[in-house]
Image (cartoon, rainbow, N blue to C red; front, side, top):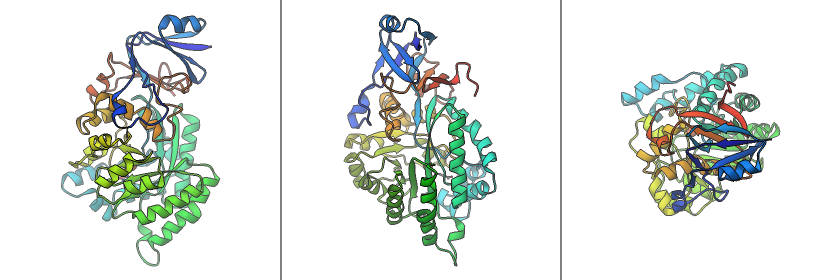
Length: 421
Ligand code: NIG
Ligand code: FE
């Protein structure tokens, strides 16, 4: 039996091709009024005038949207959701002038989360992640990519990915797992008798085969940045990941230019993420590729760095842009995706249409899911968010607020609407 969503002030369908929207295509966001949506099982089956939809699904249960805005559930294509303790002490260090990479050189930053995660059990990590992901869901997010990357040993990376699998089985969210064993070179591989080369061999020869054998990840990612992994190393590690059937992502040109965006395009990576320090050549390369440029303005804001990714130049060149939270304990501890939309407009100079498409259709494209989620159109998964606003432009406007009233994932209530799971 179908469920019919009636009385929305706007239905933001974002309808269009099931692929990333590029360049000027991102200015065209379909918003309908006087429109109903019918859902049958996990699929959207009709979008149209209320009387027509009701007549076709007369026995359906009704959800009264009460004059709110109904839109595709938000797709957060970049998070590091599996970690232990928060790292608030680094916030003050940065305010006092100690940079992000300097904190890492002193053994803090990612290394501090690694020490902490290694000491925790799978159960403990699961219990910590559960409420954090529920908070993401409470802001309208229905699809979340989640990376490992704070284990950096075979067992601790597998432990993190198994936590993601348990979360998939527990939460009514669409979770996409990414293996990020190449998040850092662990401290123990920086001094003799060990070497970074040995750690890279461990990723290629032991971690990737185990991750693939257990089917624990869809993507492999790498922090390709001066001082972390070189483009040469990234090419090797991602090449190996691909032979194990994993799709590719890169933390690319986040703080310093390194040619990582060009590498992402050359490898046909699904996305290149961050890009605050992308070069002109990198912009051209992404514009000429299918790789989605995933921008994370919350990260630069939280780090107190003045330079944001050149979103307008990317769009002018014809690239596809996604927005994501980068939810993590070091550089972006926010669960509020609508706040990231606010930053997309105020910091990246996107229009509201561009920001919303970047967080729905293009977020889905950054996960290879543009034919499955991110729009309200027949055939798509019923991943919906209902916001307590009358016009979708209010979503980035009431910045920092929590306006999500309810969400549904695959047609099942996920947040609000009486669902407390
Ligand atoms: O996306 N840059 C690398 N990874 C994360 C930060 C991780 C951390 O500091 O714990 C990021 O910003
Ligand atoms: Fe990240």
